Image (cartoon, rainbow, N blue to C red; front, side, top):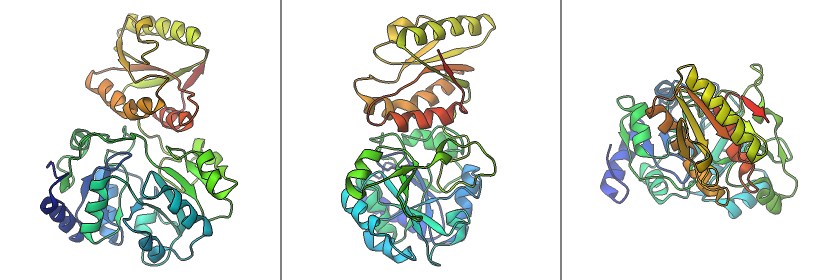
Length: 342
């Protein structure tokens, strides 16, 4: 692992690894990505192998210039330019019909390709210096919490990939919003920092795909995170949803029961509720008045519980006004859809 954030020579060396078919983990503004040459089928196969990722789960192609999107799309919907003007570089992924330049190994066998232009300065320079478009899912073992620090990447993938670019802690902490432009009305396949309301200001009507919450094994994922259990800690996570007093009472009672059964318990609290929990391993995710803090800390909190050896985790729910849907999407997946309303 090398701190290459301000070292052009080391970024050029990382780019050479990509050109030679190797894998490099790198920081983006959302989470760390595990990058390989998007046009090299064997590089994409290496990504799936390193992560233990199902091969029908599409990879996102990262670019540094809009012309690269034009280069790999068989057709480009009008919304693509509007959305790129509004949100690129940034945490938005667009799905468009692909041409033959992008292999099916990169798209999970689909005739569409997911593309985004990251805003992180290290990511942009790394992609540019590599001279390639870079296919990159999150740089973690498949199903585990996404990495927001280089140490998270090293914990999961050390010895399985060729290099890690250490750019420090990421900014947002949740993966990009994914919007499908390949079938008419723009459709959100994964919620994120760019919200439905923000998209609608630019392109008009936007839908949310019901497959976001589908557990149907016959539903083929068009985007990362649509079907498989994701972001999960090692402990058994349950979300408790309801009014604050009822949630706190339920979590405290459930904690006592689990402790009595010899379990090690973790609790995801906020700054507003931390003082109400006196038993178990209580970690504060952030403030409800600062939902960005909750998004930023979510994956790190889940990984901290792993380090503490927690077996059972109870989390409050987070129906915050702007990106609450994105936060709950990740938390719901991490819990395997296990939520209790109180």
